Image (cartoon, rainbow over all chains, first blue to last red; front, side, top):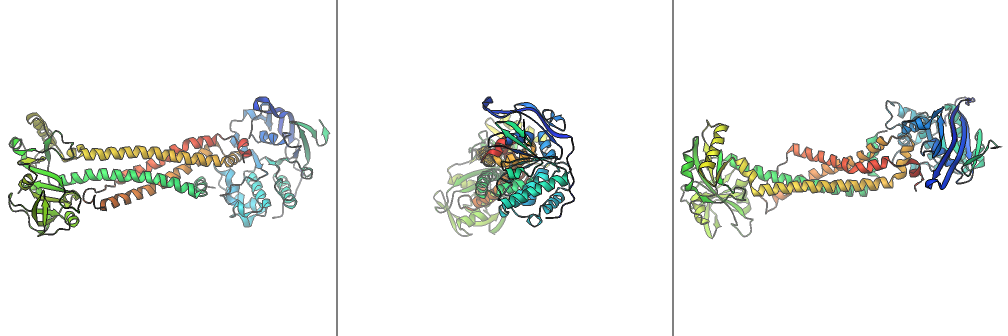
Length: 237
Length: 375
């Protein structure tokens, strides 16, 4: 991996994300995945969302990433209500980078092809390949550009997925159990990459995990239970 | 990252299904190309024969859509036709499709009025021409000679009568090359149709205008009830065999198009169903639903474009193959018009777009979070 540039504090006091009484119901209200979530995430923060399975942490991530729509309540991105956004695809493409537990790389595409996927249909993006190559070099994958996902290790695949999430210089990285499919060594490496990239690119990171050791790498830990936030950095709510 | 390259890779990742779909489309397109080439070739070949003879108008019975126009007594109408303005020659012709050898397919046998202009366009390769209307001899086209394995000096039996082959000729029209020609009187006697012809060929003088031709046509209709004067093109296009061939070709175009669209529809529907999670990933990465539609349509259009190209080549080969089988030789002469082949290619792409449209819209409407949860 290339040496990273000097790290400095990246948080500001401006909330990049906030929500008011956010709910997400399924089965005509019988299942309540989120039940009145109020949250405020400052620009540049590294937030870990923890809690038992089914507590609503992935649902919260999906709502932030506009993969789902809230049943009620409102989410804000830099004070702009999500409900006022006319093109959610553009928001996802330009402001959000997703990292999934099972990588979700396209098997027929090379490492470079996978990283370039979010740039497809992006008007006027002429240096995408150069950016992707540079990102992959920073991830230590410069010798893997033409490899297919099946030719990569789990850790390498997740680093490709991180490069893909970063290709359009997003504001927020949403990582859903990014180390869930990795052994401890690769998990640690991937977390290093996320942490370093967050600092280098002034990213806000929201990471879902059920692993306390992984959560410990974040600045702030939000713990959820039954669709609600129960503690925020150890403080009971 | 190129969308078309991605679409191509998506097709090659499932080679068996892609090959099967390609084969189905290619076969449909091949059937369209072959049947249309044969129908058009049949029409063009007959028109070429009529045009080569230098005939300006053909007078025949109204029931000219028959496979072979109904025979009639020539002298009932010939004198009246000769009186029409601009008419220089009125020449009788009697055609029959006859079996002349047990080991050869039925052949066209033409009876042409002796010493008429009909013979002028033929090129004698070997032997001689008939020397009088009573000369009971045959001249045969080069293809007929090959099919019947006959040469000058051999005999051919027509309707139980053995007649000597006295010459071999070459024509620019395939149907004539595959035919046997005798003086008209001889064919009338052999087929027991004394004085009868299928058509009377009219040669008009050089000063004739299209208005004059229309006037002649109108006069024939008015003065000769039951008869019609038409151009060779009109005669051929009204011919029952030509019309049936064209109807079959049109029906094939319709059926093959429907089957092609359904095959593509089914393939793309299966493909997006298997790739639901992948489409969810693309949407999560910020792909606009329009881009997803473009991807799926690109895949289906690529499939049908490739199927179209293969089908066109297959159709050409199929037609050439049919032209060379014994039964068909000398009867079909496939006509491959470049604009038609381009239209077939265009049709293939349209089928791809139509067949892929619903699956593409369905894919674009995928709910990303549900798709990502799918195993």
